[in-house]
Every structure is written in C-alpha cells, then in structure tokens.
Length: 151
Ligand SMILES: [Zn+2]
Image (cartoon, rainbow, N blue to C red; front, side, top):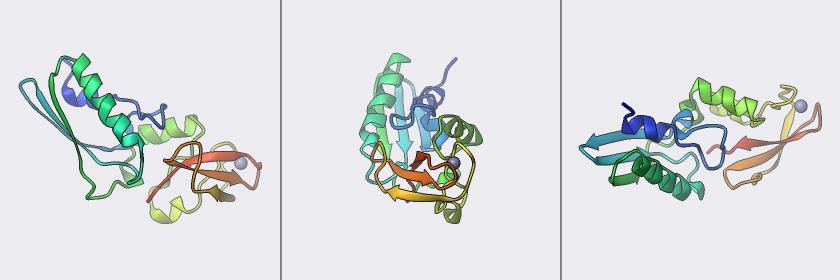
C-alpha cells in the first residue's frame, strides 16, 4: 500500500528533474485523514516560481493515487537549507551534472565543479538556466555549470 507521503516524496522537482522533492527535503509533513491529505512544503528558494508547479504536481500525483481532498501549504520558517537534501539527492544531483550544495553555508560559497571536482570555481551569474539555479564556471576545466541557488 502506497501512502500519501510516498506519493508526495516521489514527485520530481520541476527544476531539477533528476531528483524528487523528497530528495530535496522540502516535504515537511503529509497528514492524511480518510481521503483528505494535507501537505506542508518549504520552498528551496523564496522567489522560486517552481513552487506553483510543485504544488500542482503534488495535487495531481495524489489525485492519481486516489486522494480527492488535497491541500498543499507552504511554510517559510524554518527556512529550507541545503542540509535538508538527502544523501541520495546529493548523488543524483552530482550524476545530473548539477553541483550539489555543500552541507554548510561556507561551502556553498565555493561550488565544486561537477565534471572535474575542482573547487576553483567562480559564479558567473545569479541566474542560470532557471530562476532557481545560478551559473558557475570552473577555472580548471573552463566548463560552465548550473548550481542550485541557495539563500
Ligand atoms: Zn572543472
């Protein structure tokens, strides 16, 4: 029996298709009461337009699983941090060529190149291929790469 929590955690992130929102650790709570499901999520990045897509994806995944009365709430506090990304999520991000954010704030200031692993990188732009990613370049292999934007 698949629970509502399983369904919610398996929803792919609309920005980072390689990972689920469960991998990213943004699912705070999934409460079920009969056919009623109440989901609480915390956005990865406060201005992220993907949150509307995530809400819609959660609702349609739950509807497909047979739940009809669905509410998705957003909680901004405590703020999401990259520490909430699961180890599985980190390896999936690395495989997708997206620099997994470091565990601490100081590490996120220097993104490691997902191709050669060098920490000699620079941020080119706060805005990468999507609003939730920033664009970085590796000084060792000169390859540009996307990094998950952090607060
Ligand atoms: Zn490199």
